Image (tube, rainbow, N blue to C red; front, side):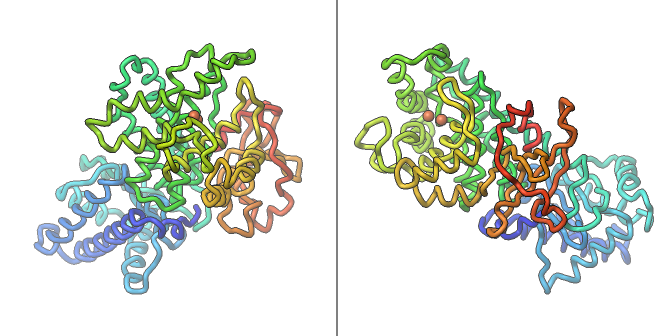
Length: 483
Ligand SMILES: [Fe+2]
Ligand SMILES: [Fe+2]
């Protein structure tokens, strides 16, 4: 598990979340201390139970679930490390020891519990036998016995830096792919409904984007989520592309420190950016022969079509305006050399400039009818070259910093001859060439096994990255490993 604390400090929402998690720890400490000496009917429980209920309710206003977990000797809340503070050190230590005594690693809350449920939870906690080897399963059986749902105990993890247990990785992967699929389904269904553009289902789109924003926060800084954008489907290029640009823009915006509501807005603009392409006949989009001038002009007009499709929503939702502008401006260029040539566009909005870079990156790294697929490092080099021209130079710099030399999702060849898929960039600026990689074992198999390796570790020096390769050359589906 990596420390996401540093980047979390950049966002006020993340800071608030850490403060709330600290409160939960303090409230748990008070409750456990009192429960050791008083009967649960005692007055002393009323206020701390009420406080804990309120804090959990606040957390669930922005989080879909709340996982409080000890790793080594530290607490993590939804994968964000809760840094120790001297004044509360004794509280952390106390809760940590009480969990350890019961062989528990923490708790996962799936709903905010009511006061009565929290009281039952405390009863089960206090009744848990000390040093029971089977701590968490035993605890969860007792919870089930008391009819309590929405919370479960977690088994202890060994030490900080240990990989997440398999089921957690699978759970994260499943939820990431679910969130991606939800956004993709929305786009697919929109194409059917688009006869009536006003019907673009804003609520559904918001829900899909919100899940991706949640995932991004859960990851701490969001950048391990961008492996999702390596999901490419040549036939359904436009659909996947809109979701990929949405994923990339949310991750990038998060790293830029955009506040949460703005991030959701950016995600929505990114999801809609090529809405106009859904109105272009598929035979033109998928044409294998050379396109006529009229066909190119039609494709070029997707910016205007997209803006027009969104326009009817403006009266009911004034916040549609930036989305309209992103649809209209994303090919306009930082230097205003792109299209459409409309004078009133003046300068691209920040969201348009962000979407333009993510759009360029995803478009280049996907095989198209009229274009070979660029490897991720090649695409970054092309974007770098266009800094100050097509793209905002400051944002290009930030994008390359976030992506590292080998962006998540890249398939790479190692000096050992092995193949790997990059899953997370190294945040140490001196070690950007040594990301976390899933090394593929037994390439003969249809779905090779993969093991996660941090290339910056001393014992991994032999596994240095030689170059990016095209996964198709090796018959590998890189997105299977990239999340
Ligand atoms: Fe576009
Ligand atoms: Fe696009």
